[in-house]
View 1 (tube, helix red, strand yellow):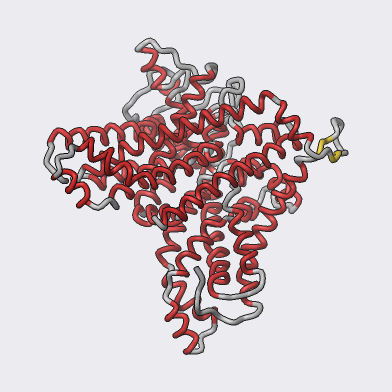
View 2 (spheres, rainbow over the protein chains, first blue to last red; view 1 turned 45 degrees about the vertical axis):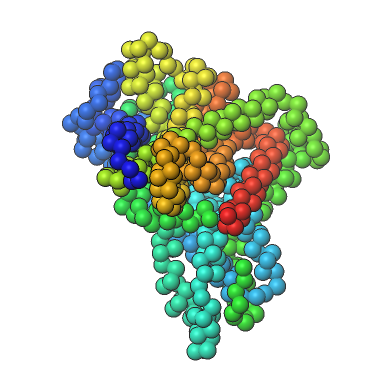
Length: 283
Length: 293
């Protein structure tokens, strides 16, 4: 602080606190809704303080599912699907992109720049803008209603490749020279030197991509028709929009809480890695 | 930038880029090519045959007032989401930067909306403003405002904008905060010694130094508003009521899957892709400039 202006400090605290309260309000209301019984949630005004049906509601959706509308699938299944998808996307992306950037940075070969640009272009077109034809391709490959269909189309992305390229370029050449003098093969160099050095980048990227994979909505919505492949984010939104029926808010909001929980925990407990991942992937 | 020291191997590098290229070719180039191709086809009304019609789908699109309405809506929507979202995040970041005690707790509370899926964010805000039981609707009713986003187009748009900003505010906040913390304290101190008050210091020193971050965030936010808000719109309003929240990215999906107008939807896809390419080029141009700042 440059100078002491008490009123300004108070104002700063006040503004931030108001901001925090407004930002947290939707989550609080959701949590409160998930702890009451169905009857309470039908009458306006709704309570603003938690009720006593929390364990009951969560147990119900986890084991029996939401019960009405489109799916009776237990939330434990959709949670598992989301977890498989998020982990698959995060690990898949990291795996294929770290290998590709290793090739592009550490080798000279014909078509190298072509590969680089081909990967670069994918950065520009998120799956939403080419959704219809991508669906067609996945359908013709017979990958609808399958984990590979949920995961593999989403691991084509340039951000991770760029991040690793950037990082590899900053690794001193002396290390490569030393490895070559010692007669290490490229893969040995990759495994014993580059991989351990990239640990933090990998972790940061993992956090970002896990959230990205978990929060996917349009893609699972399109390519899954079997309930056993539904993810939690898409079920929450689908159940909220069942035509001609009033949602059971207490159960729906319990489901929403569970849909938010894993990525929020990741962000809160790995905050440093998360921030680093965000800043790195946008560079 | 290139490496001076490299390995000499003939086949290994192809093996290494192989998986990435395979995925990119199959799930990126193939569908994009398909989109370009289908944007020039018209399907027979009775199904089955399709005819090559050059740019007729595009011509039709440009004569379609619904498309222009959607485009205009997207521009207004994106402008509002980006400008209000940035202003709010900047305010919070500046205030959080001033605070010394408790700063990291505030930060923790401000970062997590990023982790909430846009589709879930849509559901949460829909619940808050639900016409029959929503708690905010109730409070508004108490002060004499009737809020029904299911039937009122402007209110629906308002709600979609609010939910979109909420979902993106932590991202903007983090980047602004990082930008603020990288401004040398000595500059601020020098200005203070010269007698500049906090407001003056902000507008004359902090704000200009923050403008690269701001511009970067502007591009990211416009891209977010164009594409990333799909989940919010889908979960909250499905483009309605009427077409009040039918932004371009939602229209592509709606026309293609609900309307079964593959040619028209593909033409829209192609246009949207062009816009995205343009925005990304702007983003990269700018980032290169920032490096040499």
